[in-house]
Image (tube, rainbow, N blue to C red; front, side):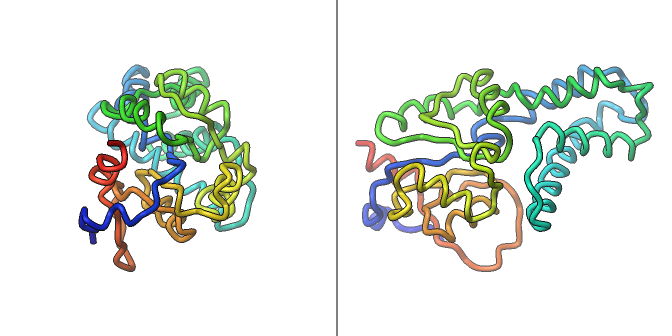
Length: 240
């Protein structure tokens, strides 16, 4: 349930806002992947009306891969390698071979994940929040991927924590604890806020007493009712 506004100021003023990147701050689908797919050679096996669903399947396939590796306690791999493997599998399922979409086409598609635009309200919000709080990224992937996305999107953060840099993968609790330690908040996790569009990300952080912004769009069966903070009202109060 949502907490009433009168209760919001009972929470400590955060010192750090920890953001996921793709999907949370950037619109990976419409700003990058869909245009990249639509620029590929026409193919009757993957008609234009199926491109949107293909993009979604590519993203979902990536999540399945990283969660499978995490469950098997395997080391994280380069995100470009994962994206390429999922892409090749999806194309093979649809009968699209290398003679139709060759190495160059597939390489450009994987590279398109490195250039993304932002959601309309994100840049201005981050600029305002960064005046009072540390705003940082904690996301799966390589540091190079994060740098490329930050450059192409024009977003500014105080620092970037990639799974490659920390040697851990979300939703491993250790990666959130490592980020808190680097931010000097390991003893006060309640002074950090996790902002993500992915439910698993919010739950993993919340289990460590990190506050979380409940604005995720993914549809999951929730096993227990979770209280959440109305952050729009909360930050309007503490940013005065």
